[in-house]
Image 1 (cartoon, rainbow, N blue to C red):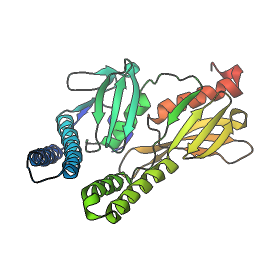
Image 2 (cartoon, one colour):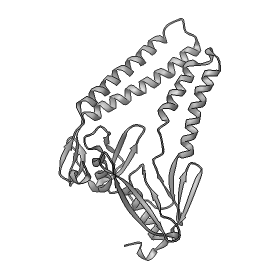
Image 3 (cartoon, rainbow, N blue to C red):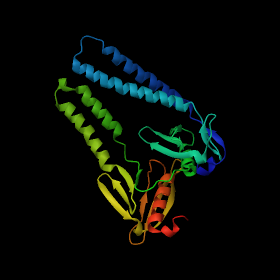
Image 4 (cartoon, helix red, strand yellow):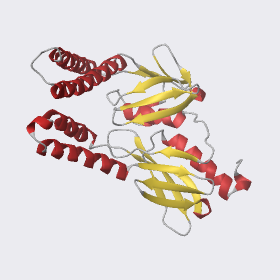
Length: 286
């Protein structure tokens, strides 16, 4: 399914099996949390073990709450129309769709109205998710930002589950079984957290330049060096497209940027407006 197929008014639904699997996850995680709470009342565990159980209880409760929220989301349909987007009986006009937030670790995209209210959450299990996501981002009406401001970019989060699992293993082995295993798994978790920070990405939109950050490395692109700002799309294998903002430079290679946490539409308008005002003030209103 491509973006062109989504322009007709229709509703998109989640497959029933997704709701059942999330319901099962809710029951399992809730049961594990309840079991660990029950263990807190036994007399043959020491204070350290109680602390360990408390940490695991919080983790499984959080997973149960997340899975329950997913079940509710899977029970709603997403309505996409020329006039706007919404869920159930609500349809928010496009001029009131002001912001999206892409959360890869939580596997969802949240959609916000102009008043700051989140009115829709999209999950990858949705029928035609990629095309629906692209259509919403293309038709939203983001609020303009004034420099200095920051555009958050998506950062590699593939090691996050391993980091959490390693931290939990460090807690599980604890001090009773010696320092070696807790130190090993704690070190793995810390290393993955530091790797994430070393690869974290953002764009600082300043009054005279764009600064592209990846971890502690920065690429400064003055507006006077940019000859054009345009969008470029490459189709994805499973539908939708990857959108790049390309900074064309007359004296150096162009700079393609992709992976916008709040959607390419908002980022493009912000960067293009800042560039026009700084480098071409006579065309800023055009």
